[in-house]
Length: 542
Image (cartoon, rainbow, N blue to C red; front, side, top):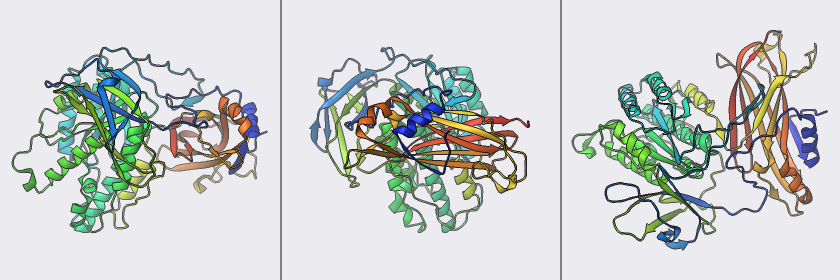
């Protein structure tokens, strides 16, 4: 029988033993990006390019020979090419997996085939309640004329990042989601000194960049382009760090973190379309005390870095939404193998041309050569306002699922009674000592083809997987925690068999009766790709 431990050293034999001990869990369905990383693969750079004529209309029918791609001025060979757009054939959406009642998956599926999906990000963290109210009304106005089949998800960034409504083309459901958004002031603690303002800017920068990174993880397994329509003034405290630091000496430099987020957004094919909720700004922007000029530059930089468009000085925010969705629904998806380079932090410029007069191209214009697998490290300064800890906690424990690693998980009572004197299963909250508890078994099934193995000198493939399970009460109190570290050691001749079957990891947790939420997550340590899912549970009292 499988005996859970804090650290599990596993091999192909262990994987087989886990398989034999968890036959009741169906084999997980890999996501669209479940390409075996155990084999030698070639890194591709994917560029989504929108092409329009002088009237802003999409241009169809271009061929690979019409495009020239250059990186740092050197021509690159196009390895794949596809035109996608409204009215063009698209691959059918895979059916939603049919799972038993006690099995859950972080796989996302769309209701219908589409060339691109769209996300409306309602930002209560970086905009005033007044502007949030304007965005709400304008988004509702757009929905009245939304073209049929338009796939939209609604997310809210406030005291956390949460899903208001998942992807759907149901106008009534989206209207209800937008109507549920209530303008609020998230960081309401008064700030007076330059030091306090600097800390506030730090909090907003880190929380926002973490949210963008989480959004990339949320959609990474969905195929095709994603248009992130973000109602915000940008991140000028990051993109213009040198200017802001002259005024706020305690400001942290989040440039590296933002560049990493750009890389992860590019991998997930996410283009950001920032929309300034302030509308038309009268007068000289350089003379404004709210640094409008720097904000607009920031929005332009974010759009250019991700292949989107910044919408500035427009009162018709509903029209900006329509233009962003229409412009991002017709595009050409090209890929090439970038020249070998080191993670030296240098910028590599991408230039794409079509040899036809009068055409406008929009695409990601370059990238920073850096290792995006490393986690974010910046922290707000110790002088942060008192509510910053709660804000960071809310963002860290977002209910937004991540699909960087696709997995399925079975949650059920273990059937093993808890006897007096038994050690607790998991790192139990001391407040639960002596209280009635019930032992649950959580079995994870992860397609092994997603896991990154590195070849050792003797040919053995090694890797590492972290599986985290955290139980939270309805009041947000952490009830129990269990973490499993799985070390993978696979001999060369065992690789085909290893890839062909899922990796099963079994966890046991003692849980109190009542309503709670399980935060489940899988981390492929070498690549830092994450899969996560929150599962509501009701533990019966008997």
